[in-house]
Image (cartoon, rainbow, N blue to C red):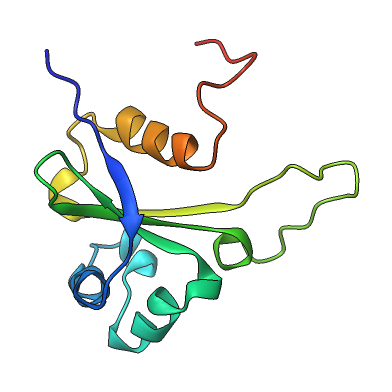
Length: 120
């Protein structure tokens, strides 16, 4: 069985337009974005990236840092290496057992994969 490989690249205007057209069904509709979110996606300080498959098709996105933080999420000084990660996947890719490879690409990007001390 072939394992899909994903890569992460800088997000473009076209990517932002495509991502904001993805509308999720309830109860996931809270993750749907709109055209007003395009400036947020393109702001380099927000650290958004496109996730593409082997054929360079946009299949998702991720962001890191403050923009990815869950409201109310706070960390202590004892947790200096915490990295907030936000993700979104194109609806047609959901439910196809691609989550592990999708997340692995993100973890590779931030330099924490393979995970030390991780076991199944």
